[in-house]
Length: 212
Image: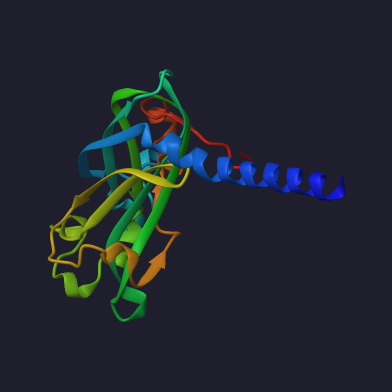
């Protein structure tokens, strides 16, 4: 009797483990995210008094990296429970002898509708641009070139599984450049943490709460 119970429990836990491992994969296979476009724009610095900072650097433009995407799903629901985006930007760190680094940012959403005309964005502040512009790039962020001289990789994930990606490639980098080298996670600013959030909140899906 003990052996039989032990066998039943082992079979139960094995089946449970298999279901747990397979469910995210099966779910993600039903979803495809098409990243239609990656746009890079200058946006005016904002703040008290219309952005009139006493510090000249803080008066400079921010950079907005905006992604337009479409969600396709074979499922019955018109919503995805979760959807994440990861941004990777090749840069040079001026505070560390122009060391090659990868700027990384992530946005996590819930209750994302199936369909197109959807947006996700990241921002770089004037001081982040000054640090990660790099002398070797041969162009100032505040004059011409700047971030448009950098490679950008964006990928979409459902429960950790990649369901779409797109590259904005300028330089002839290894195709897996964003997986290599030092990674910097505190430079990119999510839309919800940017100075424009109050004005632009209705452009984006619902962000996933940190406690979920």
